Length: 533
Image 1 (cartoon, rainbow, N blue to C red):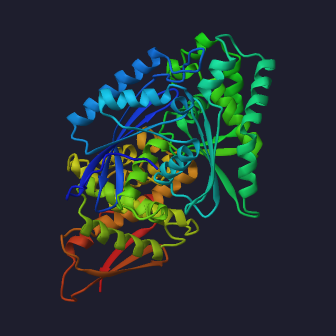
Image 2: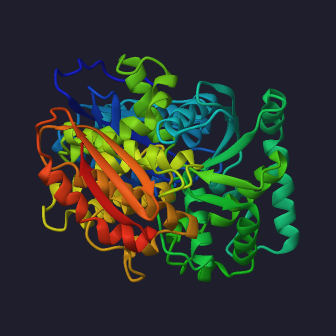
Image 3: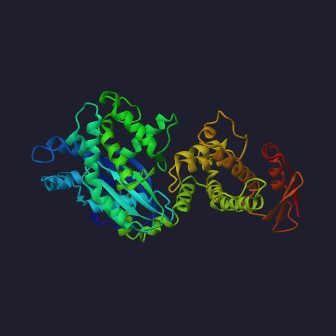
């Protein structure tokens, strides 16, 4: 349980909470803005410094050099928090501090000289907080998940589902520890690589056995990887595949691709690894041992694929604080409406009119339900969910500029934090918003190039057409339209508009719908006819 100085929650909708993670390799700062109405948070700022606190002297103590690096970083973090009116700072230290004989002295010194209270957390508590962090950023299904976090000094393995953590484990094997204990600056040969795999396997075996004992028979299970190691490897795989850089949250790594990249790294001189653009020089020093831990764990747990989560311990500290303050009641509250909450949060941030977006969503769903096998196959339940998200965010670009707002909407959606959605799903939502008005996609458009498959492009064309029609019906602040009836008569798409008041003329709605005729003709080879009942 993380402790901090008592704080009375201010009577306002938002507040800033900072979490600091003092790790073996790096010291990280995260500042989260907590929305007390939605009971969720968004990440406002992150920073880190490679402090290498895991460097020890001959007695296993933290070295004075590494302590001073951390002190310098903490002073900077504290100054930043104070200058930005952060309401609360939560600080935790992990394996490097908990294993060092002078670890408690370090904690006391930080408290006395900097006024920062550090909570020293156990490996099991670290695993629990990592689970909370993952839970806050991914929409977990009904299956089980094995979460792996490869740190500098330890590796946490968690078996969990969306309701609870089933098994929490921590092993004393990490990327920095392996590098310090076993590796020099020369390339790793096959013999050394095999030795490291054997060592890793022995270190992870108790954790893996505990996970396997708790697995439910017949229940499917997936793997989620957090930490800088997993994100760096994802970037290397993207580069190896010749794919454009993207957010790693939700990105899937195939084991065979991981092994190809690992083999290349093993055969490269360390000086060449340090020149790889997608990883920092300090990360380059520990990328091979980190990759070996990840690959070995996948072997031991029989996974051929994993999903990357960019949220872990730091976000978990924020969630834990929210739980203890009663802002959220239990872990399941985080998961229950994660997709809906993040869309509502972003819509509010960009000043989207909720009444009108709800109205457009209603129109869009009426059209969707009546155009199965006309506009879409209806076999993909995900399509309607992504359409819902696009309906609530398609006008967010007006926050930047009314002119060409659909292009601004694409940029804002693509680059904002949509929790629970993968990067490919975020790209789809953004592209549906992009193409709900004006021209159809062109090969040169970045928004079109961001879609990775023919299926994604088809989904965008179909859902953006529905959104185009729904948005065309939103011409007034009030809603005059009771319902929409859509029928296919030979080669004519008949759209019948039914107003609440039968003597109300829907001239604006009819005129704007008819502007969509060319797009319907081009995409579906149908003629549009609009009538009012």
